[in-house]
Every structure is written in C-alpha cells, then in structure tokens.
Length: 394
Image (tube, rainbow, N blue to C red):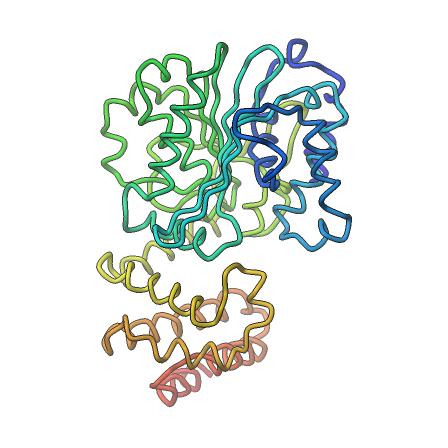
C-alpha cells in the first residue's frame, strides 16, 4: 500500500479544514472498514481513530496481523499509519456493525467516520472471507435486492440522518454496491444532505435500477472508480461512466486499491480499459449466459452445500481441505440434477481449458501439464472425452 502510505505521509499533518476531503481520503475510509472493530467501536459511543487503533493493536499482535488475509492485513497497516496523524487521528468512529446471517445469506459490515468539522462518511465493507459473504456477492447476479442491500439502506438512513454536516457514503467491491443502493433508496431529506457517493471497483445492478426516479435525483453525486484491468467492477451494469484508474498490478490483482496509482491528491486517470479487461468481461458474461439465470442459484447453493459438508466457514479453511474429498462431495450433491451436473462439468472443463490456453500460451507443454493437473482433480464423468479433447489440440 505504498501509494496510500505516501499520501498519508505527505498530507497527514494537514487538518481537513486546511485540505478539504478528496477522493483519496474517501478511498482510505473505504479500506479502514476492513479492520475488525468488534468490541472497540460501540454502536452509540464514538471513539477517535487514534484510540481505536490503540485498542486494535492491544488485541492483535504483529503475528496476528501477518496471518490476516491481504485486504485485512493492509487495512491494519493503514490504520496504524493514520492513527498518529493530525488529519485522521481525531476522526471519530461510531455505529460499527458486523452482521453475518447464514440462514439469510447476509453479510454486512459498516461504520460511520465523523470528521472534526462535522462531515460524516458512512463506509461499507466489501465481501469478507466468509462463505456467506462470498455467496451473497454472487447472489447479485440473480437476486435483487439481496439482504445486505436492504440492511445497508436501514443502516444508512438511521445513522447518516444524525449528521449536522455533509454526508458521504463509500465502499470497495460489494461495499460500493451497498453504498450506491443505500444512497439511491434513502429518504429525500437524506438525499439532500448527501454530498457524494463513492464506489471503488464495485459490481453493478440490473438495468431497470437506473430507471428509478431516485437514482436520477442523485446521479451527479455518484462517483465510480475502476482500475484499467477491472473484472469485478464490470460485473452486471453501471449506467454512469466510471473513472478508470491506473494500476501497476496484473489482471485480478488490480482489484486491490493498494495497486492504484496516486498523483498528489487524485488518482492517475486512464482513457480506456485494457484489452484484457474487455476480453475477460465479455468472457464472464458468456459464462453467465451459458449457465442461465435459472441455474445460477442452483450452482451457488451447491457451492454452499459443499462448504457446509466440508466444514468450511471461511476461506482460511481452504488451506486444509482434502482435494480428493472435495471431489467426492461435489459429485454427490443432490441439488443438481444429472443434466445440470453434466453442464457444470462441461463448464469447468471449458474454463480450465481456456485458462490454460490464455495464460500459458508461451509454453504449450506447460499448458498441457496445467490442464491435466486441473482436470484430473475434477468430477468429470466424461473423462475420456476430456482427454480426447486435449489430444485433439496437440
């Protein structure tokens, strides 16, 4: 996160009244929400960011931080960097929530940042490491609204209306989607208080969402940012043209805002998406069309059943999963009928084949080895057919 850290080092000594809030500050707030503030930030008892950081590091040792997923690890480093600055240290945190409901497939985490002069930034966390959080993000493709969107609206309406100053809302990934949904769906009186909505590489909405009168009421306040090789930010639909940001990472790694290039107090802009982003976005849309809307829910339900039967509650657990057992469980799932199973097997083989061709084209033999290793662990009933397809490509 060297770019954000350099920004904090340069402007950390400037109060917000001296250097007004900008898109980089909003991005920082969208990342700080990835920290676990349970037991630190109470619902109705504000605490300064400096105090919150001190309590956080009383609970988390250096070893604990190193064991976190990358996004949470970077958020912890960012929290430490912000804590002792004039700019962020006195910002108050309040109304922290972190709700996961497996039965409702709901995951939402949010907090209010209140600046000394009264400006309020309501930040929503993106998808966390839980299976529930991942599934709910996937549900955006076939359900609207999802449970987190409904709770985001209630949370935003309840807490942002307490503001006596400007109101912003923001989020990264699914958090950006929640911020837009809450801003569009809130009351007229709150929309009038709203100064800006910021979504960083966030998935979109159904087409008809943008026909709503409420959307057009705040359209000019919505700011959408995606990296030049965006994948997540091009899922579903965003009616408004995004600001394309330069990143120094490859493909999916650009989803991490730590790779976004900052020039002084703004992102380095790009004129258009990279060819790889265009290609992958088109490819993923083709896959969704291939699966069909009717089968999307069945597919994700099958994923959830697999995780439950293997005792996977979050993605840390994947490190200890027996791949052979995983294959057996997937092959025994009853929620998929024989025709669906065959279609999904074909889909997996197609993805594996395309990945091998696309990312290992410089080494044909290596591509065949990768493909063989991948498909060899998958529950194909038509294994001979798969091997025949490979030989046909020699």
